[in-house]
Amino acid sequence: MSSMQLVERVFAMLRVIAASSSGATLTETARQTRLPKSTVSRIFSTLEALNVVERVADSGGFTIGKGIVALVAQMPHAANLVAVAHPYLQELNETLGETVALALPAGDNAYVVDQINSDHAIQVRDWTGVQIPMYLQSTGRVFLAARSDLALERYLSAPRMAYAAKSAAPQKKLRAALALVRAQGFAWVAEEFEQGLTAVAAPVRNPTGKVVAAVNAFGPSFRFPARGRQQLAAQAVVATAEKIAARLQQMA
Image (cartoon, rainbow, N blue to C red; front, top):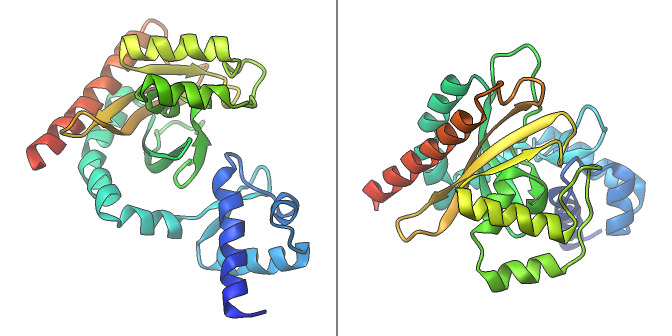
């Protein structure tokens, strides 16, 4: 195998992993790349040792590792956003007592670049480095709602698959959900991407008004949002996103 062939195979595997929201298994990666499972296994072992990919404990699949996330975070745009946003995420984490994160748009996915976990005994998983289809979760719906009508129509015209029985994937329900996001300025998603998980997100705009990131807070549905505090939670997330945007404006 030539060096060029090896590089092509590695990138083909990474594309499969990046497109998977729950971790791409060895079998699935081999099928999509049309590579022998033995070859995929050897490459995975090397990439895992380098922190380029990480094994997902519950599924046995692989997701993008912190080594790649660290590289992305060092890019000027992403690094600046992460550095600016992190203190405000910490503040939000302390205010709500739940896990908070920052995501960037990546094609038709939302890419989590920073996450601060809660102190609760019952935790949610670390989504850092994971790309999740936009229509399924709160940060993604914030990104979709910010698209032009034409761009959104193109997106909605493509067939989508739901990951949970309660998913708002059917176009009529998804359109209504996105209209609500546009009207309210934030997005709630309850048990549609992952059962038992509820999240709320708000957009971060750059000095020109473009949505460049999204802040979200999330936790187990039995605990988040606390009874009678749904609006307060949404307001806290919106306020955090606005603080980050204001800081970006100051730095422009």
